[in-house]
Image (cartoon, rainbow over all chains, first blue to last red; front, side, top):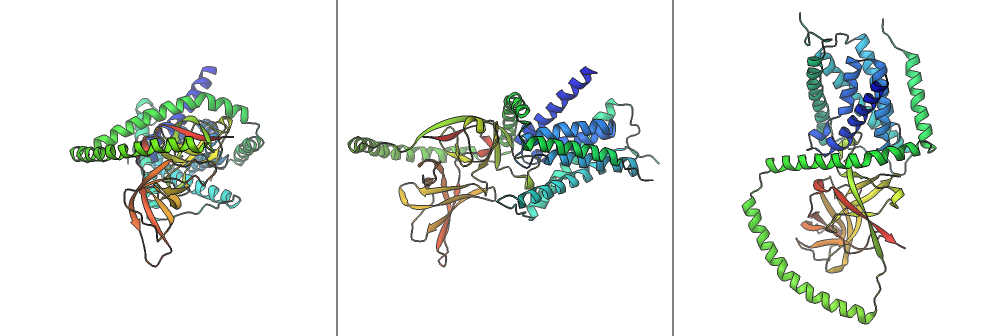
Length: 175
Length: 271
């Protein structure tokens, strides 16, 4: 049991390091990847809600420590997304196919961006410099790129996990 | 029937609330210190590795004509050599004059070297990449407003926010980074340099009567308390001059690639 906890902590810290330092230094379109979000969705789908929530709390806290936004932004966002995604998994998208994970990644990415924008805007109201959004075409293109790269990553991770796991066959819906 | 586990939601929201409460009162600071001390070196190494990959990618995909660039650089070197000779003469004269006037420097600056651990932030809106995080913070004497330079003394940006072990730096291309500047050789032409759309810098509030040309070097004016005079910010690449306007603007470009900055120095005024 202690070995499992230790391995989990190593994986969480590795994920945090990859997201914060490695991905941020990559070329522009690759640096848009939200690796943490996609991994959390995979854990929720392939493992269970409890583990996904624990990972969300720890990694969200680490991201908040290194973030210069209000503390709790990432933790709160990830927890909300996990609950939302779980709600969809248990009530609507129950088959756990590739399409399910792609749909979940799409919705989770949209929700994440919405939550971040909202919380930053609300917190900036109390700050000396209100945050003004620039909803130009570049902003929307950036958002679209973020969602697309997340979905591509989800696609790749799904195949990798399915290859090593016997739990999810078939991968595609078969009539 | 739709399943919602309200108890679980409330429980985890309470955990988040507790974390935010503990952080607000500084009770998580010791843990934050330990985590920062352990992770900062690893984050720096990972950023270094990532940057080297990114650079290799840029080199492969770049379509620059290297031969033409080499020829241009040779001409530039020749021009600089002759300019250097002139400046050396002026420097010698200046040193003699300083000795006669018994001139003491008003500011004596020390540097804090720091490594870049992250660029931008996953929760950064509009995917800004004009910010970097460095592995030094208030514990090392840093505070907001300090200037950050590279190894050649060229301005990279300004410190925007400081935590105990890390700081956020707005790069010169960031529209929230503003530096009081002047044209090298013309002390009376001063203005404010600020980032423009994350791509270039713009020097504003230059009087219409001032004659500025392309290639002029822009330096820090020293009007800001914590930023010394004489730090190179960039070079004028374009002028925006409208006859019906009070001021003219100059578009500047930095002589360094801000994506390749890995180690920076923060200048601290000595009191």
